[in-house]
Image (cartoon, rainbow, N blue to C red; front, side, top):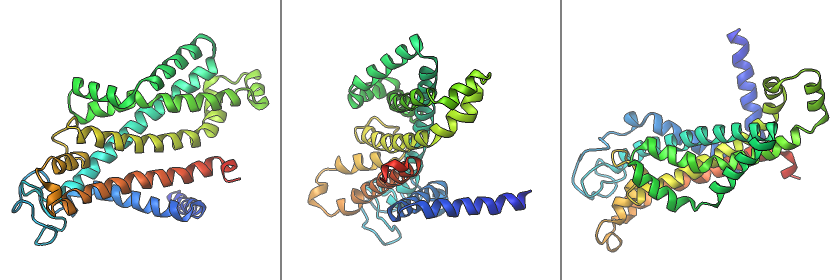
Length: 289
């Protein structure tokens, strides 16, 4: 049985790879490399990420491939472990907000009536609120921990997938084959498994990829403002320490201390955006036309 599953998995992976554009393939490769960097951070970083391992502000080379910060902490080690923080925040927010918002959108569209009105009024309220200022207040109120940041981000992100999924559900539930299946006794969970999810899953995946990119940028912004988890060496926290160093722009320190985390953050967010664009095209071929 395993012998049959593995070739099928490779064939499907090959088909998926062939359907991606050149930019989508590059983005997927970068994403996979950054995920591997996060997973194997202890193996690829030769110095501790939270303790001094040499002189302060050493340029790249001399045993530190990306230099050190003002405390002598190896920058490459901090970037490797910072990849974990960004991926955990992006994945956690995408799962919590993407799946939660999608469930609310499906239920609201299917039930209609009062349920739909309540959910949509909540969506309108969340969209009308200024995201970043309220996130800053909530992050300061709940405390700077990674779990709290994910919860705050998900609290403000669920409304977008809920609105998108609800709109698609309103179209699906009016299709003749859906009405026919319901007429012959198909309940909600049967329709969900057989008809709704196969149609909605690509849209949900695209929404989750977008949410992950948004969450990574927002977490970096909160960390840059000093509201992130101080024990988690995120890329935003590295940038915060760099720009707060007196006279950094009058020295050469910015060339590694500030530039490297910004580069990795840009690579991750841009790769998610390009890969998400390809997934959106595959999910809805009408976009290509």
